[in-house]
Image (cartoon, rainbow, N blue to C red):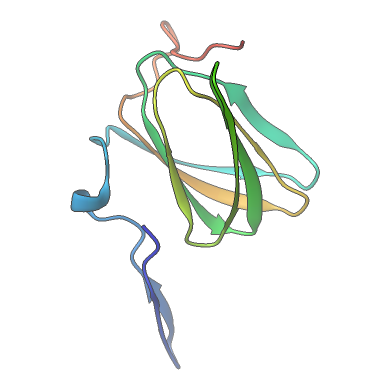
Length: 116
C-alpha cells in the first residue's frame, strides 16, 4: 500500500489505506513518534495484527521469529503489516511519526504485549 501523492497549489492529498488492501479488521487507530536515535517496540503479540504507515521521517523496522530476521527501511507512505508472534521493533536516526492500524483495542488489564 503505497498510494500516489496528488499535489497542487493548495497542498497535497494522499490515501493511506483502503479496506481491500488491509489484511485485517481495524479496531484501534493510533499515532506514535520515535525520537532520533531511539527504538520502539521490541515485543510481539499473541493475537494482535498491526499495520504501520510512516507519516513523517523514516525508520528501520526489524521483524523476527524463530526462523528469520527481516529488516525493512521505511519512508513516508510506506507500510508494513506485522502478524501475531512476530517480534518487531522500529529504529530511526531522524524523528519519525507513524500511524498504527490495530486489529484489537488495547486492554490495559490484559495487554497482548510480550518481550522475548
